Every structure is written in C-alpha cells, then in structure tokens.
Length: 151
Image (cartoon, rainbow, N blue to C red; front, side):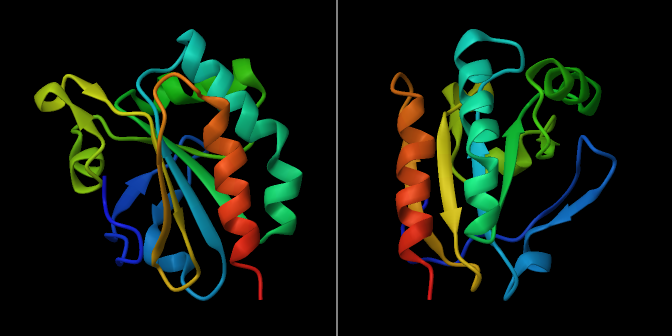
C-alpha cells in the first residue's frame, strides 16, 4: 500500500458514466475515496459497492467523491452499477496501470487487492485501508477518516 501522508499519484481514466477522471481535478474542491476491488458481480465486491452506495449521502455532506476501480471493462462496470443501484462512477483499469501505481495488485497482476484510499483536498493520502474479508470496514473507516478532514 502507499504510505499515509504522501501525495497520491495523479492519473487519468474513463468512467463508467461516460465521464473522464483526473485526480488532480478534485484538488482544493473535494476529498476522494478511491477503492480498489477484485471483480464486478462477485459477492464480496457487490457487498462493498452497496456499502459505499448506502452511505453516499453522508459522503456528499463530507464533500467527498467516491470512485471504484477494478480490472473490469467499462461495459461490465455499467452493468454492475445498474445491478447494484450505485450512482458513483467506476473506473476501468483493464491494463492494471492504476492498480500498479497504487500498489493494489496481487500475484503479478492476476488480481486486485481490496484497498481503499482516502485522499484529501490537497491530494494527500490520509487513509490506506486493506481488508480482504472484513469488507464493511472499508466504508466505516473511510468515513471516520473523512470526518477528521473537515475544517
């Protein structure tokens, strides 16, 4: 995992909602939760997506944007988002470049680690969470960290 209190690596990507993502575009405007997950439509990843979905209003009040990242295609992400009823965008990292940048790769790229980063408005990593089995700990701890960032 990347270290807390270091600058989050900037990157650009396409989003499942048709938009374009560039991390630095959020600087001085929003906190960002960037969560990496293994695969669309799997049971654990579905639970994780729904936990972020269910707390989206709270995150919005904390001026925080959520983005999920996996190796799946944009088309898979669109179907997954629709089936889970999630409104936040998903990032397709089919070439695994973003996951490598964020040290979120297992077994030389065969799978993504389940890691959540909380990035503040200055682009600094304030939380790095890695729970493969205790999936709901991602949202709970990400919200605690995000609350601590409020001025």
